[in-house]
Image 1 (cartoon, rainbow, N blue to C red):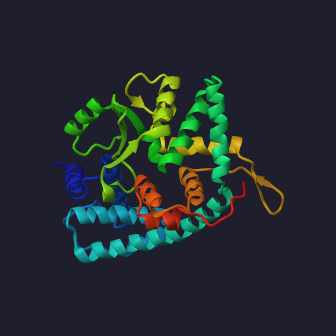
Image 2 (image 1 turned 135 degrees about the vertical axis):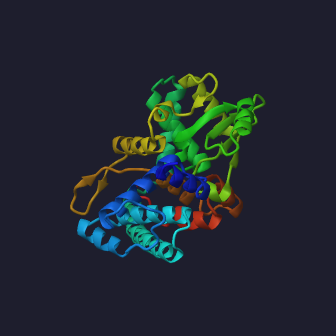
Image 3 (image 1 turned 135 degrees about the horizontal axis):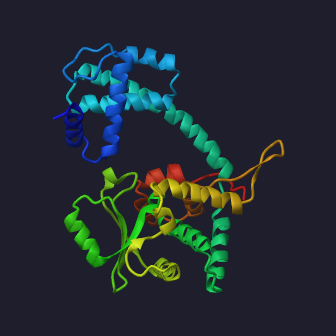
Length: 329
C-alpha cells in the first residue's frame, strides 16, 4: 500500500464525516510543508521534526492568516490520524487555533460591517414576494422570477442556510429506499407523500454533526406554493428543486452569486458618506436576519421552531440573527 493510500485509510477512520477531496488536500499540504520547510518527504516514522521552522517559512512567504490556518489544520489532522508525537501534535493544534481565532475576529468585524450596510427590512422582502406572487397569478412564466419567489418564501418560512440550493424532490417511496441504501446519506430532500404529508429531511448542513438528520413538516401555504412551483417549472416527479443552481458544481456557492446578482438588480444602492453609491448584496443569512428581527417580539415557542429549522440553539438565534439595527430600506 502506498503512503498516500495508507494516510487516506487512517484519515477515513479518524474523520469519517470528511470527504476524499479534503483528505487529498491535507496530504498535499503536509507533503509540501515537509519538502519546502524540512527538505524531506513526509515520513510518519520520523517523529522528531523542527516544527518551529514552519512559522519562519510562513513569514518568509508572507502567507495570509487563512493560509497558515489551513496548513496547520492539514498537518494537525494528519498527525492525529497517524497517532504522531502527542506533544508536537498539540503544538500544531495551538498554532492552528491561534490563526483560526485571528481570522474569526477579523471576519466577524467585516461581516458585521457588511451586514449592517446590507441590512434590509422584512417589509421590503415581503413586498417583493407580494409583487412576484401577483405576477405569477397573472401568468408570468419568467423562471428567474419564479425561482427567487420560491427562495424568498422558503427562507421566510424555514430560515435555511445555503443548503436550500441542494434541496431535491423525492417521493416517500424513494426516500425509504435511499435511507435503506445509504445509512448516512448527505442528501437534503423534500419528501412528497400522496396524502399531502410532506416533510423536509436535512442531512447535509452546517450543524449536521451536532443535530444529525433534521425533519421539518411542510404544510399550509408553503405546501401549496411548492406544488405551484413544481407545476410552473415542469417538475414531474423527483429532481432538484432549483435546476439552474443544481447544474453548477457547487450549488451553495451558485446560490450566493445568484442572490448577489438579484440584490444588485433589485435593491436600492447603499449611499456612502461621500455620496457615492455601492450595490447591496444579500445572502441567505441576511434574509433570515431580516425575518427573525421582524419576529423578535414573538413568543419563545416560535423562536424554538425557527432555531430547529436553522440548525441552531434558540440562544444562538437571539444572539446572531435578531438584529437591533434599524433597516435602512
